[in-house]
Amino acid sequence: MSLLMKIRKSSLSSLSIFSFQSFFTTLPHFSGEKKETSSFIHPTAVVHPNAIIGQDVSIGPFCTIGSSARLGNGCQLYPLSHIFGNSELGEHCVLMTGAVVGDNLPGQTVLGCNNIIGHHAVVGVKCQDMKYQPGEECFLDVGNNNEIREHASIHRSSKSSDRTVIGDSNLIMGSCHIAHDCKIGNNNIFANNTLLAGHVVVEDYTHTAGAIVVHQFCHVGSFSFIGGGSVVSQDVPKYTMVAGERAELRGLNFEGLCRRGFTVSEIKSLRMAYRKIFMRVDVNNVGFEECLTEVEQDENLSKVPAVCSMVQSIRDSLAENRRGICKFRQWSRL
Image (tube, rainbow, N blue to C red):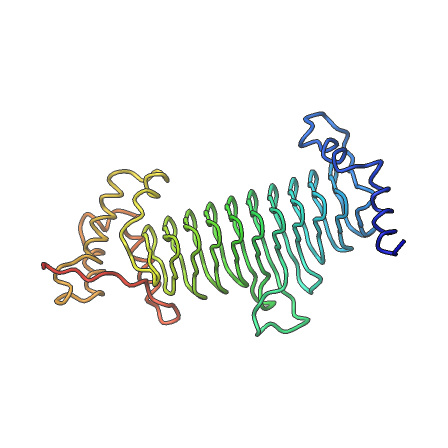
């Protein structure tokens, strides 16, 4: 009998007492029974003695937990999930089968509470930036209540003076990628295959459709929507919708604004401001700066906080160190 067959036979025999089925039935999350405040560690799991394990933690078959790992109370590790390096998980985090958190690099990966890391997702590993210097510290901070689905990848920062940041309550669907030094806010929805290059900033309550690409250093404003298959190479202002192979402004994100509780009056004001800035028929006679100034000085629009926020978002994107805003259609009387 070959050595590989002996190892397989030995591993299978060790599972005879604690089978996969018995592992799932012992999880408090699945059984619904009240359990004592103790942790369950499957005999095939490799847990370093220096790792800090909280109460009511469940660690499944063939998991790996490194020496610097810290797991909060109630965490669940499904079979073949791994935690490496200086990584910290808050309470009630779940790692699905094949998930990987952390890397054996200087720096740290920190996850807040109630995060779900999907099947074969990779969170907190080395960045893909050629400027990264081996041995330099790199960081990832993830907030609370995020769901990161299968095969997603989130990388640490590219240098010690920066960090990749994910806020709270984000849904990051399958095969998404968030590169080094990105800053993601709260309550965002990234559909499958959303790809963010390095240093991208995404604010709050944004929604991307599937298979979109965002160029490095771009900013995506709050309450905006990016259509499927878009390539975003410049900033997306707040409250707007962009789409296209080279993403262009297509109007306000009306559906998103309604869902997020914006009033009819606010939406009407935003629409009026948008038309004054981007849909003027006399665009050849009035410069873009004059359009913004006109909205800012409008007696009614200037009193609406959402309008002021949209105008400021556009002005910020026009600063020297920014990429400008996505292109928009020129209108005429014809």
